[in-house]
Length: 223
Image (cartoon, rainbow, N blue to C red; front, side):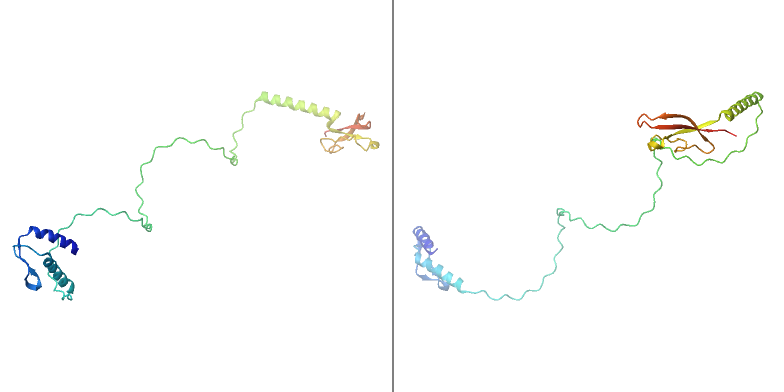
């Protein structure tokens, strides 16, 4: 920096006139007069003297704080700032008590008819109704009924003579281990129901086993 100042001041010295060198000013600085040629060494000496004075001084201690002045007037309210970002959602508060029930609304329109449900189980029979009045007797109906009774009596008398057949069965010869046995559907065995008698009706030869078998029918007579 000192070289730069010297070159600069040397150039400036050629343009200055009536500079006067050698006079001492206050505080040990060189003084110059207008119209005299300025010596660069004297200028540099002035800068050095100032630099030494500034560099050799140290700041003093801070003085005591002065008393606080009166409070000034409140300034005008500033414009509202932009809204901040929305904060995180807080916890859900406790459920409040249920309010009173509101008035009933008007009935809605009736919906479409639903499908017919399944048929329910049959209910218990109802109590028997009171007996109706006895109807008048039809003579022709009585005559027809008497005719039917007479016909049934004739059939019963005929059965007393010919008997009633109630199933039949077949018994194979014992020499063939009774392989030809056929049970009576009315009893599930080679026998007759109670009050019926086994009547022999024939004998056959079994084609598969070549064994003989006797066939019976069960005959009874009504009382």
